[in-house]
Length: 232
Ligand SMILES: Nc1ncnc2c1ncn2[C@@H]1O[C@H](COP(=O)(O)OP(=O)(O)O)[C@@H](O)[C@H]1O
Ligand SMILES: [Mg+2]
Image 1: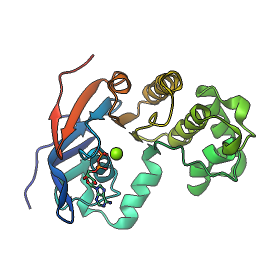
Image 2 (image 1 turned 90 degrees about the horizontal axis):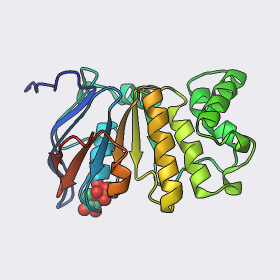
Image 3 (image 1 turned 30 degrees about the vertical axis):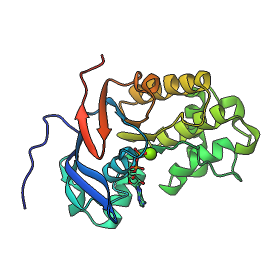
Image 4 (image 1 turned 135 degrees about the vertical axis):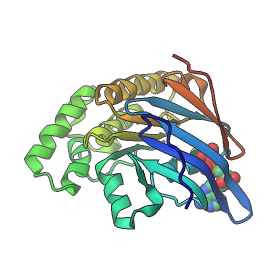
């Protein structure tokens, strides 16, 4: 087995990732790394491989070749159970459409990841309420997803993604379904909350004004990645 040097201080690193779906290469030698607490935007046109890269980094998709290291551990060397424990315990996720559970209230939605980790209901809802406050949607605690706007739903989704105090937050086009005003507010709150929690953020977007909230940008094109200069 080849050993790949990990950039000093990096929390999550991918090197030389390849992934094909039939004849279509989705990733063709992509590399990536993020430091603790760093917000990195993964930019690139539609179909360039951004979501596939995010799914590989999060241990959802297994690359055909290449190495992914999280906190010094090789993802490929873990069992499925270890990878899913990692996703439940150390990673948070926000997608384009909030994917909240429609039958549950906001506070129940945000408490859900804690409940799945065995936290008692009262304590889970107390912590969920604190996160709804940080995202400025505590007024919606007892509402169901169908009773709120897209921007409000995404704030609740951000609260849910951070309630377990993840070390990495994966966000795939988190404002893709919002108008620019709501999108900017969600990005402000997301980055502020993630920085406050010292969570690293892998932010997939094809919009420059969303990437502007990051510390650094990586551009993916035809499954290959390229580092941009530090933006801050
Ligand atoms: N599950 C899949 N099955 C087949 N092809 C896929 C799948 N996921 C992605 N692809 C293909 O891989 C390429 C990269 O897709 P994706 O990572 O979703 O790009 P992006 O997120 O940048 O739009 C595209 O050509 C896409 O059609
Ligand atoms: Mg995508």
